[in-house]
Image 1: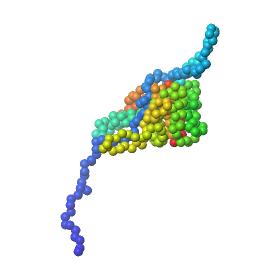
Image 2: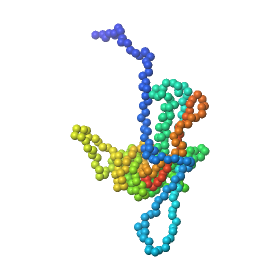
Image 3: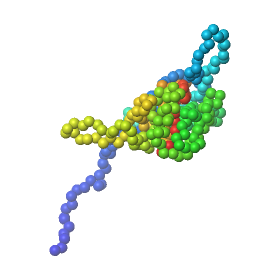
Image 4: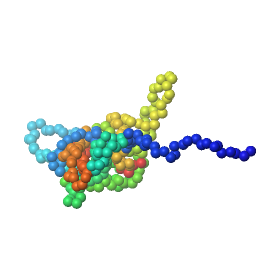
Length: 323
């Protein structure tokens, strides 16, 4: 039987000019967590070189026994140490043409306001990464920016723990500045014994570690540690059981420590932090500055000038090049 073609064809819309079907919303899943900056204290700086004092007690003398009637003998006391860090300028510049500012844009009322909001999120992420970095302090020049030393640069030997590895070290501040680069050491698997040694070292120096801050790989490593606790959770008789695949608190002889996942710390670094010993000091807090017009556009800069204050660096420990 021979096939026949229908005399008429159903109407289609292929030749029509259709109205654009665009949702009036912008989806953005960019990560925004800034754990360290949020948990650290906030202070004020009054100069591009910010200074603070730190001190320790003399070693304990278990044989502190004086002879009855013995003459007093005064001795010189050690003065507090002065630590310093440079302020760093974080900045985002952007502009919107006069036409773009007046046109109707999907997902926003005003393009300049949208860019300002986006830039504020970006600058906070940049700062978080800088605060956790191993960057040493730098005074800068007319052609290079000042750099505030990051947390890794402030935690130095013996609190830069060598966990079964060689050549892992960070030297003490020079003239009060954390200017020495971090030597990571050989790549080494991280263990519960290594974590306990980090917590013990911080405790022995007077620190009270409340935060263990790591990237995702090391978070999973710590979650796999075997210990006294078993991974059970009470579930109702008709409820589904839950599989516990991660730990959020590590309990040691030196206290309970929150395990915090960081997107911005170096992937192979483990921080054991006493967050009461850290502060972000601002010479200029977050502000939006109008930039002079050059053409038919509105120009702005979002900036903050800040530094990291390590009140007691030795209350914290770190291990580098861990897996």
